[in-house]
Length: 222
Image 1 (tube, rainbow, N blue to C red):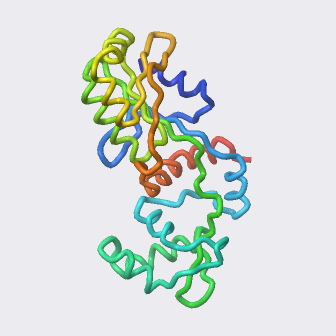
Image 2 (image 1 turned 60 degrees about the vertical axis):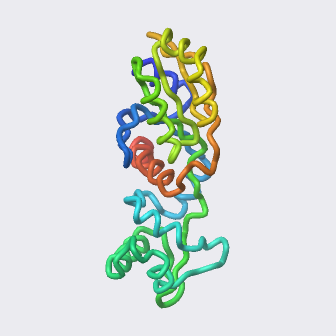
Image 3 (image 1 turned 90 degrees about the vertical axis):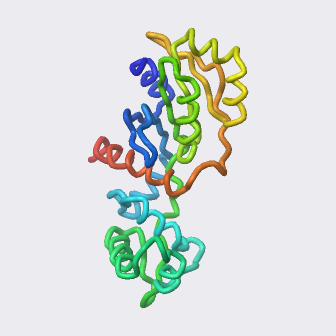
């Protein structure tokens, strides 16, 4: 099943990772497509390294982008992120973002974000495989919508068809999760994922993209 699912994702020109760790568990496969235009914008800014862990991404997302001509002070950031960052740690993280070229210090204690390329992804597809436990697979697939733009449950063909013809399919439809029948050599989509944009957490999405960014840069180094 894993091989068929991976080929299905790769056939859509997605970069694929297996056993993708999330805060709530492991997703069997994740596929992602990146925007070539935005990749070039990021590289033109000299931002070849990954941003870092989710808390650093959350800090970065609080800083106005240079394209808006807005800025924010470290004191304002400390107030907005109180409870997430101790103040001394926040200053260290700001220094890291400046050193890595993601943030510009435009005045003493005043900062702008340098990532007009965000979001870098076009699609993020999560794929959860199960042999028979449909409800458990659906629960996990719904969780993956916190970062994925599409989420699918993959089941053996006979199990998938029974689920599609039962009342279980209503739960798939209302949650936005898709259903795929997985054979030995191919996958057949029985129900397309229809996720809602507001389900996704932008910090988790960017963290997911950053994990693919490392391998993208390694595989495309000059």
